[in-house]
Image (cartoon, rainbow, N blue to C red; front, side, top):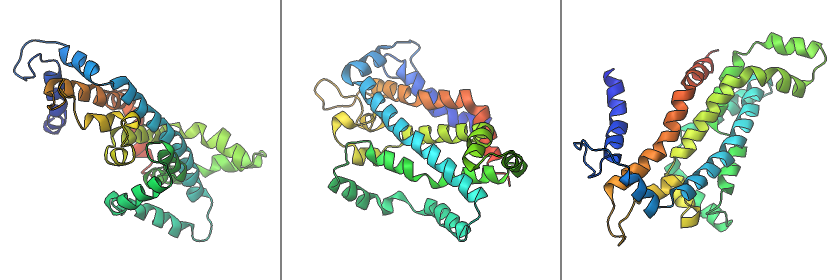
Length: 255
């Protein structure tokens, strides 16, 4: 309960100040003026749409590619596959600051900055953590189901589409939600590659806050109101799908 209070307290304070007309947590009045000011001074819907586009462009291919890679590592025992899997998992230990500048130089020279193409490429390449989750899940997946389908004449692709995918909905849903929440809350890479204002996502735009009419001061109440709107989608998604997420994380850790 103590840990829960500590984790929920920042969101509670954020909500109190957002609905406070004077931007104070001690206020007993409730007002939506901060939200109205945020929408008036900042085009929230446009930046939110940019965030949704980036999230979809990354999530769909990364789930598909990580699913295929995880299944391949679990079922197709080729020479060197265990070593390759270890190398992929080891890439999670490399901090992004090591390759952030070369990353920007590469995409800048290719003319891919201020576009969603980098996230599409990263999605197609897969994610080491998601590959690990899928591989652990398929290690615990009953091999007898696939062998019975193979005896009935199904090929590898038929086994995947008719046997594996329908029985992997929990793992797929878990990875999908993890990918969406990750890309929705990521700021550093998006601020570097999406530096043009029309291409900025909501997370990048909120980093500068809601400014006053002169553009020389940050309005605390409207800024926190906009931040509250920004954090609500992943919080609501976790509350709605928490059983699937927890069940998926638990099952992907089984051997």
